[in-house]
Every structure is written in C-alpha cells, then in structure tokens.
Figure 1 (spheres, one colour):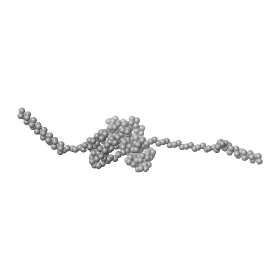
Figure 2 (cartoon, one colour; figure 1 turned 180 degrees about the vertical axis):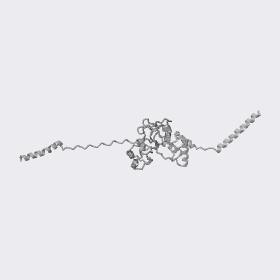
Figure 3 (cartoon, helix red, strand yellow; figure 1 turned 90 degrees about the horizontal axis):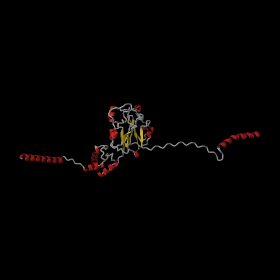
Length: 317
C-alpha cells in the first residue's frame, strides 16, 4: 500500500513540475499574433493560389497588416479578390490603397496545327514539363506551346482550356483572375500577365521564338522574324526587337495598331477591337446632262447636218 501511495505522490510531483515548466516556457517563448491578421484573412477569398506572391491567403494577410503598420500597402494586391476585396481590407486597416490596373493571362504563341505541323511523335509522360525536358517536342519550334495542358491543370478557376482544333490554350477573360498559376506552370514561358486594357483591348506579339527569321519561318509560318518593321512604325517607342523577337511594352503602348498593319507574318495580335467598317466604293462618274428639250443624240445629228446644208446653199448660188 505504501508503494502505491509513494508512486502516486511521485507522479503527481512530476506532473506539477512539468506543468510549471510548460507554463514558464509558454510565457517566455509566446508568439503574439495580431488579431487583425485573422480579420484580414477572413476578407480574402481563400483561394490560396499564390498569385499575390505570398504562400497563401494567410501569408498575404500577414503582409497586409505589416504594410499597414509600416504606413504603405503599395505593391500588395490580391488578384483574385481584385479592387473590391482590397478596398475592404484598406478600410479595415484604416489605409488608402492605390487601384491596381486589372491584368489577364495572354498566350503568346500562334503556332496552331495549321501554322506549325508536327514532325515527330512524343510517347512519354504527357505533360509540358516532361516533353520540354526531352527536347523541342513534336514540332520544329523549340519555343512554342507544347499543347499538353499543364496550364489548364494549374488553373484553379477554370479560366483556361485547350482548343482541340488549334492545339493551343485559350483564356476566358471573364474567369481569369491573373493569379499567375498558368505562367508558372508553362515551362517555356509563353503565358504572360498583361494589362487588360481599356474595354479589354490590347496589342501583343503572339510569338516568343528567338531563332533567326529563316529558321523560325521554317518551323512556324506565323512566327515573328525580327524584321523590325513594327519597331520602326511605332510612334511611341513601345516596341523593341531583342534576340530576333519583337516585344510590345504594355506601359508604353497606346493601342494605335500601326504595328499590326505592317507585320508581314501577322504575328502581332489586336484583341477586342471593333471590326473596321468596309471602305466606301468609289463613285462612278456622272453621265453628261442634256439641255432641256434637246436630247444629246439630236444635238449630234444637228451638227452632222449643218455642213450638208451649207454645201447646198453654195450649189444654189
């Protein structure tokens, strides 16, 4: 009986000492979490897509609270929630936030099945990452879309799908949140986040091929050949040719579309612009008007008969 009592006392003493140690450690190493973080996190959409540049909405909420304490929320934007969500967060934190211009994912490849025929057959793991690791893929272009749909699998908002006819991904502008998941998933970097533009209008070069013109044209008929005509035509200095490929700076572009007209391979695309009205037909020259009461044919006959009358008078004389 004494042994049982001693064991209970010893165990109780050990438990009491352990509780005191844990209590002291919790006070010593306590991590304080600002209650505003949970409140901001509740306002965020909870997509955890990483488009903001932070590991999930929790990381974004922490960054927003720290930014508010530092006095600025510049550079912090939730692409999924957009301006509405950021406005609510700013009101909660008592801060003003600049309205970021909306963006959308753009596929910079025009190598459809028609323009870029297959020259080989890939029989490995059907992902863009695996195919890219093996070489150029099934076509002669080592820069264009591989068509396996890694971007489709990465999108959490069902905003991008593969077109079976062209073999290229297509972005649904209404669903795209510009989270950037598709841009990270593409091993060739052909998907870019660009300014959505006024009324959804934008102009961009739909090619990233860096081969010289003759080589790129053999691989794809719609490839940029780096001729520089668009660069010379642009009055705003928004286009630069680097490594045999043109690029349009969305910050400088004024959507004049002069570059679209001069591109010999139609590699520059203009999106959501109204269809230009057909040019008016040239007017046909109007027929000569006849004098009142005297038809044109009668005048011509009168002129023909005048010399004959004159000759008759001379004969009578």
